[in-house]
Length: 392
Image 1 (tube, rainbow, N blue to C red):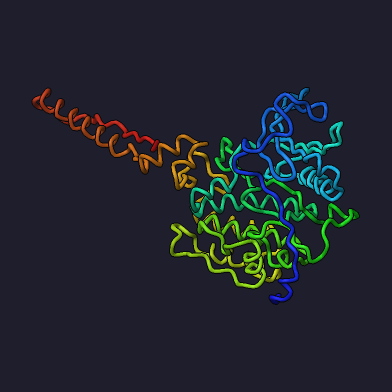
Image 2 (cartoon, one colour):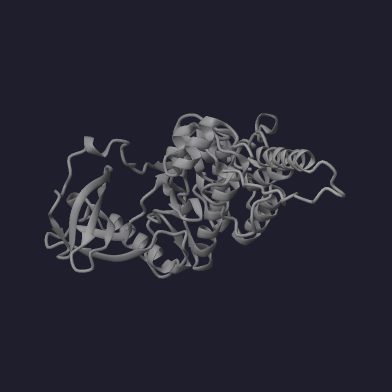
């Protein structure tokens, strides 16, 4: 266990984040500008202290992309440019549908660095969490998507080191209303970058304090299990609506490094499957050796828990499934049918009404036969098979 003295010696490197209102920041490029001789700017998506992200279109292929551009003043910094290149390499080599792919990297004629990424049209997990905690089935589904993404990265020798809700996008797909895409490998580290000059010295803390593993908070070497700890914090937040540790950056770093994580508030979480709290507690273990050792092992545990909730083996509930109905009508924007379901309550089955109507028709038919034929030898069988309707 680290001591307060060890912790106090650490130096924190802050990473800028995009403001919630990108329109408040002046764009570096304007709509219609051509970047890299082939990407036409459409609009500004977001801007931070070091760069901007634009929606752009390839002028020849007519395909939309996300274009990350470093501000000119940072394009002359070897370390910042190296991070940019590292993100490009990681996103290009990690081949998984849950990772936003990088397709190009280059410099403008003025020497400004840019990175071209798959355009992900969706909502960040942060946007979703701002509206409240998620049901266990939604949280498990999202966690499994993230697990697949980081598992693919780890297989390529890449540790993300900055997993957080802001870097997780949820995209509406025909059979999955919350398909996971993991973004931003800008501070990734691992075997994929073997031979490259180290960008941070041992004892330097870089990342987002709220989601750092104890070893990362202490500036020690990290491996794949550090990403699993961060996912444990995210899973805790999805289920409880709050993170295990709250406070200022340095306070939270100290708590991650020195204090045991609080247990998941199981009594306040409806529908929590037995064993999920133990999975979260294991992910949040201070010692890496006490956590799940691989993303594959975690994925197996999460899949088993999903099965207890009746989730299909594919792990991708349909967009109309009650299991992923939002806790708030605002979350239903990508799937209007869920909005109606939430406002009107649980859909009622039409089966009782169909059966009652069929029974009434049978009785009426019997009465007609009895009175129309004074002395029938037998009553003909006029019963038709009852029909049922699926709940809409």
